[in-house]
Length: 307
Image (tube, rainbow, N blue to C red):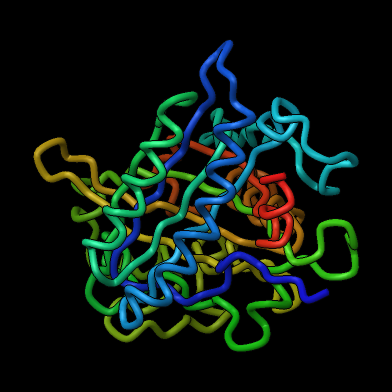
């Protein structure tokens, strides 16, 4: 049988909605969940017909606690647990609750709004939406901080290798671990830095995205600590978001991985430091407001969940 993964390794597009939903207490969640699983197939198939040039898709992730609430198959995916906060001397990667996560992508805003609305019509019967973040492509793939985001992303066949589970967990082959964090940036403090100082924070040049040489790059720069090696990569699909009136500008960090251990290692290096105390300097300007781990089953498994 061919295993069809959800669209976790596609390249970033122009517009995204990220949604986190939590089931209501004492709600009959199983039939609602089954309808959502059926909708995932419907929306993605329809997108191939209606939005051929928009690269529209939706990916659903299920958390550990939701998996248990829904009495989904056991044993669970090997690394699907509740994310535990990672606390360093100064900064913390917090853990926040979430049952279902939706990553809705489309170059055409009309289509991603329709997909989000279709999901809400069904889920609102048994769940509430705790996060809805509208991401957008900023210039040539930059974050709101002005630096190119995702330079270390794998390309080509490597995206599947690093982003999708293989034979190491046969029961969940074709699935992917999904980890998300919503970061808010202190733009006033960031803009107070000169460009050379900003470049030291990232370990890259701002204008042309060239990584500093190892003997020049600060050991607490983002590129020095967030990159855990060429054999340990994740598929990032980060998007900037913002509300000028509320001064809430940030980055929605989203990572798909064949193993969550890679993400854990990266977060420990960033927040605790390498060595301990030598934390990622970008955290002085970026605060993690959420942090949740999900699992994205294959499309085949979502169809099985429908019953």
